Image 1 (tube, rainbow, N blue to C red):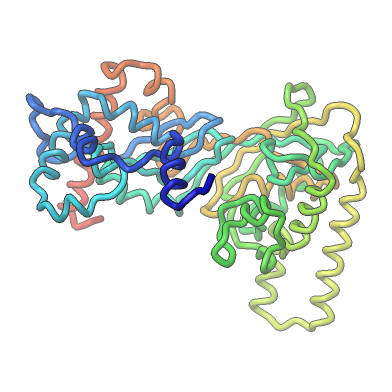
Image 2: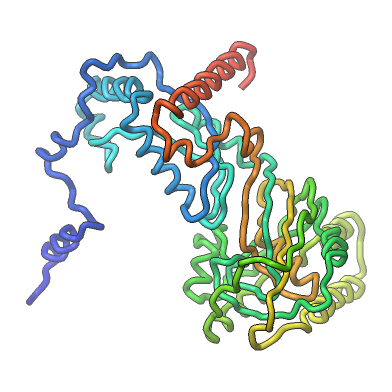
Amino acid sequence: MRFSTRNLVNITRSIPHYPAKPSRELRRNMSAPDFSGVTPAASPLEGLIGINKPSGISSAEALRMLQGIFKPSKLFAPTFALEAAKRAAEPANQRRRRRGPNAVNLEVKIGHGGTLDPMAQGVLIAGIYGGTKELGGFLGCTKTYECVMMLGADTDSYDAMGKVVRWAGWEGITKEMVEEKLQQFKGEIMQVPPIYSALHMNGKRLYEYAREGLPLPVEIKARPVSTVSLEMVDWAEEHDYEFPEEAAMEDKVVAEKLEEQKGGVAGNEATGEKRAAETQEEEPAKKQKTDETTTEEVKEEAKTTRATKPEGKPPIITLRMTVTSGFYVRSLVHDLGVALGSAAHMVKLVRTRQADFEIGNENTFEWEELTEQPEEVWGPKVEGLLNKWKEEKQKKIAEGRK
């Protein structure tokens, strides 16, 4: 059977994952819900709220679930009626310019103020309608995290979602050693982002190079970041965490080559070296000696590397930190494992605070409040927070502040 381009398009459209473009009649039937009897709001219900995102879903998935909760609610019905009235009054040519699902369907406009990985849980700031314009201001604020790291293995992603690419022993490592090594990661430090990150390099995200097994065009440079505070809050030898699956040998080789393309040295000692290089002249031979010494120290610390999985169960370490924008907790865990002469990966991450939004505060919802409770429970709280945001916004405008 010969497949023409038209046949291929029709076959593709028959698959549920790739729906065909709705017909004109279907688009008429899929138009906005009937808001007869609903008085349009004078302005959209908008503002900022915090949610405690659970582990296991992405930030984008969390927002889509919020849209699904808010869309049929009585709380947002007047806002939808306002939006429907605005669209009905649009010129025909403007309506034709609308594309995608929003052309025939109304959704609550929601964005977030800084993504959380699917593995992570914690504070996700959600901006609703006009609140989305304020989200950019949260990208540079400080954030507080609690993470759990486990010794004994490096993974390609630096966390439990990846596969083990290196085993290492942990014998002789003590709580006192951890406290000592943490000192080099306090304050202003240089940090190399993980290979599995969304940072761009030559128009491509870093994780795409890793997944495709491609070499990086240039090495990943260390970047200045800061820890406002950093402490160990727990050390446990009894726990239920297990090592992730071990990577195949060819994947280990790829991971090793990618790691070799990471530039710079982590920690505040590296920051000191960078400052010295910027503020005073150094003899080339002296600088080269410093770099060689650092490399030898790293090699010395990695002597515990093992070809097979170590026997026994390693300890887990819980860290609490407040950090600035651009900080990767996974990188801290990985670098601390190296500094301890072992290997480590992150097994749990919770963002407990971002700016003024904190787990347990009235401005931050527990996930179950929104997903398991009826609107009669969460509706008044959401409305109150959004109205409070609008009042504060109007007050700032009146005072000449943004």
